[in-house]
Length: 147
Image (cartoon, rainbow, N blue to C red):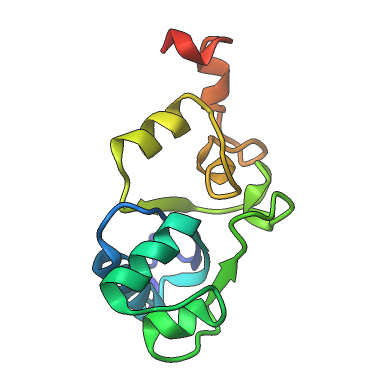
């Protein structure tokens, strides 16, 4: 049952990085899969995350990645291609309630703070336009090296 104070189901983005901690990613996805407050999860795994999944969980490749992680298919969790800059979550105007970067290394956090991108998982971590919020981009200096 949804909380009457927050009656809408949430759309989340989960980005898995190459930092060690594949069990955290799997447990998070399982939790979100069973949470009725969550309507949809856009899941992005970096190439390095795939390597960690293979080493820590024995998961191979991107094919059926969500099914490999959960042990079952999911209607709620949709895998996005890490290299697809046209993916819905790569757009700053895509409506999402929150983004979780897991595990989040200091390097990944610093890249997001400096608005530096290497793949489609990172632009969606940037403040979003068109959602009634002021973008943090307006608060940052023009030169990200100033940070």
